[in-house]
Image 1 (cartoon, rainbow, N blue to C red):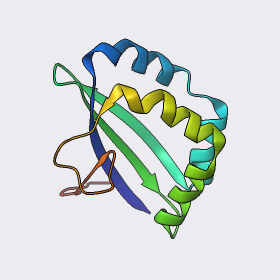
Image 2 (cartoon, rainbow, N blue to C red):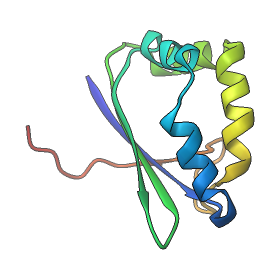
Image 3 (tube, rainbow, N blue to C red):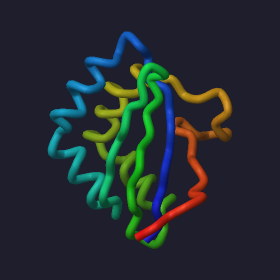
Image 4 (cartoon, one colour):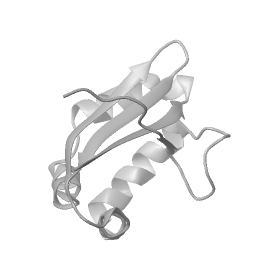
Length: 109
């Protein structure tokens, strides 16, 4: 199992809509995430900075392959079309990233 953390900004004018859609995530999207071997998935919001932090545990053996499969899902693509315009990627993210990957520096079970 691999713990993964990512961060991204949230546009101030999208705050309430982002919370609303995440209170009612489509079942098809949840299924795609589960089939991609992602478990224990949470998104946290830090205000007033409007910073989102996502955490999940990846239980597969090839994250790039599973992530690509998620991107092939029509439901997931539609979800991203809904959510991506509300987000503000960090200027320091790596090339090709939308959400900026974070390094794990501590863990306690």
